[in-house]
Amino acid sequence: MSTALDIEALGARAASMIDALGSISASPEHLTRLFLTPEHRRAADLMAGWMHDAGMAVTEDALGTVRGHWHPAGEAAPRLLIGSHIDTVENAGRYDGCMGVVVAILALEAAIRSGLRPAYGIDVLAFGDEEGSRFPTTLSSSSAVAGVFQPSMLAAEDAQGISFEQALRAYGKDPAEIPAAAYDPNGVIAYLEAHIEQGPVLEVEDEPLGVVSAIAGASRLSVTVTGEAGHAGTVPMRLRHDALLGAAEMALAVERIAKADRHGMVATVGRVHVDPGAVNVIPSRVVFTIDLRSPSDLSRRDALTRFEREAHKIADHRGLGVVISAFHEVATVPCYRDLQMRLGNAVASLGHRAVTLPSGAGHDGQAMSHLCPIGMLFVRCRGGVSHNPAEYASPSDMGLAVGALVRFIERFELPQRGGDARGAQT
Ligand code: HGY
Ligand code: MN
Ligand code: MN
Image 1 (cartoon, rainbow, N blue to C red):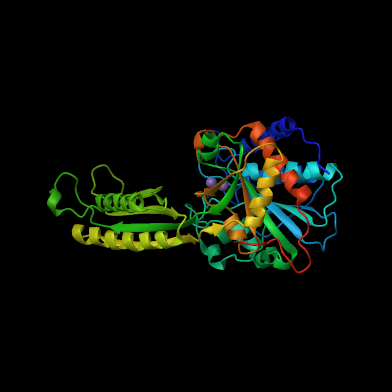
Image 2 (tube, helix red, strand yellow):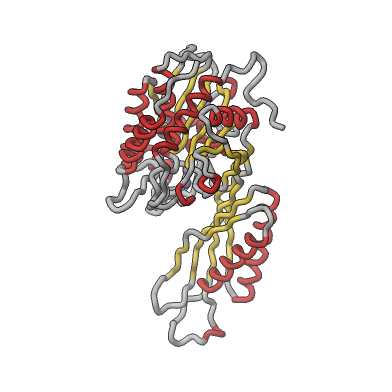
């Protein structure tokens, strides 16, 4: 039975929900919504209301993940999980993360109203910490759902020196409840996520939807370079130990390493802090971050080793100190073939070609892959622009994403007893 779908109407609703979420920000000038902040609370409450109105029971776990439950076959039936995140980077676009939850809510509403009664349950999940914009953590809320939360994350501090644990308690949560947030793997069939592509491929292919083959592995480093403060006017260049120039040379080194890689590696120095930061003082200390990604874990790890060697060489040459610490590491995660095929068939049922492509961006699916098979649906991204207020997905493409999820749900049958959705991973 195929549910009647009004793609344009679904897209228009998705767009208005995205706009409502986009107005919930820490700043009137731009969209910034960080984990465990009042803005997170307001967005979570809005999500909970939409889930409830769509016909789901709503709960919230110890890390603030809002969960919408639809269990037509009873509480004990295995569940399909569909979700994404509602936190943002600073000065973000409106679609990254949020669209995946909005699309899932609209798909469930359509399935519930159509009279569909699958033999499995569906939970929609709105995660609060995917970006890692507030604390030097990332994927913490999906990690808790997947049962792989690292308690050491509780000690992480934000820019104001507030710890993850303090913020969690201020949000009304009890860290002792975190283990209870984990699903029993035996009760979960698979995890799906719809997400704006954040790249240019679907636009170039002139297709609205894509199916993700794998999510690239990533490492995040903090590099501290120490030199010697001095008077900008009196210390000759040859006698300086300028921490910033050392850091700059290291940044160029990691760029050189990434460019030389043959697996599509990317490296970004996104944050630099300079002390004392005075116009007429030679910088004595610089802390900068590196975000390094590659579809190949081997090449990523090799690049990290090479960077470490080069950074120490630069430091020795300039009479500087350097300390490199990795604060995030996630391996490349394949999406399950069986789910890729089913998502591709759902897209094809709407009359479109499902482009298969890797994801350079990280997603909650990387954490969820510890719990169950994962599948991802990409939605065309105008100009491939993301992590930028100009980020945009069209209402009709979002409507098609809703439609694809509905078609997936209609055709997804409970794996045979003893079997699982893991299917053939070959
Ligand atoms: O950084 C990422 O890839 C994701 O947007 N958090
Ligand atoms: Mn995202
Ligand atoms: Mn993002």
